[in-house]
Length: 251
Image 1 (cartoon, rainbow, N blue to C red):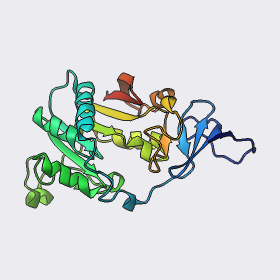
Image 2 (cartoon, rainbow, N blue to C red):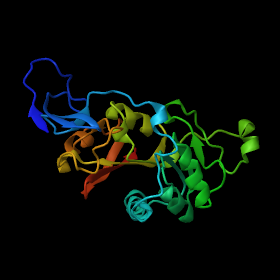
Image 3 (cartoon, rainbow, N blue to C red):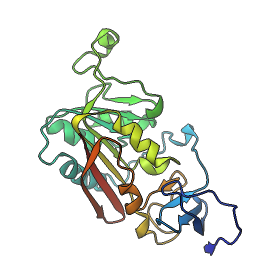
Image 4 (cartoon, rainbow, N blue to C red):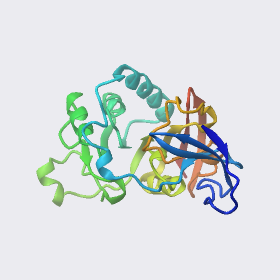
């Protein structure tokens, strides 16, 4: 059910553009969402999600073929005319994209809160340690490429990556601009940052595929374009199905 918010000064400003939040959507059990009057971004008022929400049940064995289809698109969009190098994926989930990147000659690594992500990486034959089970914002890079796990503490440090990918990650946070800035810190000069997230302009109500209790902020396409990190140029952006993506390059 959607209702127009009428009480003055009871809602915070839009996290994406600073505009007024107006239309309220009560979409239980997922939560109550608000649409920004200015930019059209969709967001909950909640600002955090308990880490234990990303438990063993968070990545079920369903829709795997769809994950592979999407991952092939991500690979095409993110790596066109880019030679293989070091790639970091944040929240790789079922690890389909990590597998495709590895098969294409990339040295890959992932960081995820969900224990099942580690299992998926091993299922696809990726080396142990490919996915680290930790919170990205507490993660202390680097990865020591080609160094056995037991020897990593003494190995040289590599902190930047030729490609950083975050698909369906941004919407889990209340501060999307800061999240993109944090992701950008791990991109090497000349490297790329690829972000993929739901497109709230496709919102259709309670039955929409991206109405979820763990989705806190879904920037609209104009809002996402305005989140380009300092020192980056936008290479390309697009919308597909219910989603949107932006590819950026560090100058």
